[in-house]
Length: 124
Image (tube, rainbow, N blue to C red; front, side):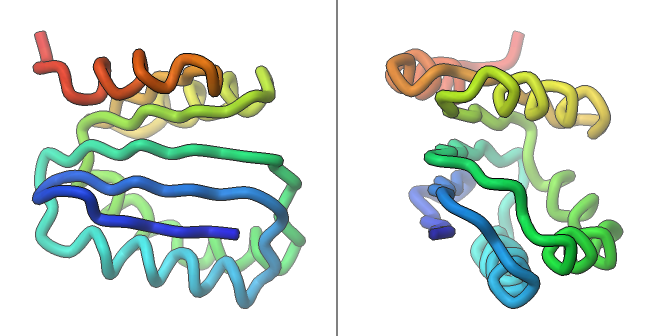
């Protein structure tokens, strides 16, 4: 399951659970790109449910779209990732360190209110 909802002028909420194959990855990336049109200085809330590694085909699709994904990421300043698995939270923060201009902070599912507060707070 991969669902993207535009909840404001500069905000996307993403809900993901399960495993993506190449077709689902293609659709997910298309949906992200389409819903992010016009966003500048965006914020994203990314909820990750029961995570399973994507198929090799899905990883290939993502890698083939790396330039598009970098342009997509530049639309956003801040991303809150909510995940139960500690390694998923850690991986998301490492990813944030690799993307200039994007700050990613990870939270446990029980901390969703804190994630919302952080996501909406002004930069210092």
